[in-house]
Length: 212
Image (cartoon, rainbow, N blue to C red; front, side, top):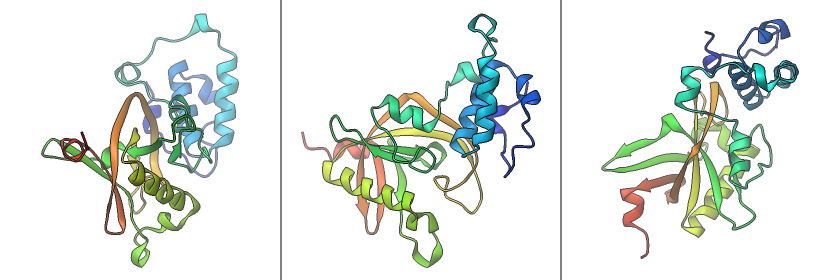
């Protein structure tokens, strides 16, 4: 079975003609569509949707073992499930829920650090000496603004994003592949400002600092 979740996309859609996509199982086509949408490959997304439209529910293939283990959905769909509509579905990694003003942040799962029963993850750092160019982009500045809001609110939510990193880039900017978001896992966290950096913290460390 083809490992669609680990597929790398090039600059062109030549590697994924409709004929090749049509040979995949339904779950694999859906996963490919999610990956392509996350990476801005609109032509591949259109081909996947065309293939899915030709398949009736009764002909749906049995889900793969990996799909059974963890059902992942696209980043924008995961945010919408939490009541957040991203300003830019391709580049935004955080947003504010209109109903209650809570900041919801996408967190790269492999970047989470665990220690003493607590977890933390760097959300934003300044582009010192060209070390974090993404921080100066519109998406990076949006993340910084949302971090500031979360610090003031003393609470936020996190969605875990799974994929494979690309050396030399923060995953929010560019990744080797984006598998999707686990919609069943929502992290309740705090955002801390450590010098010029913003960090998400949850677990024992975050709980110890909450006002009761």
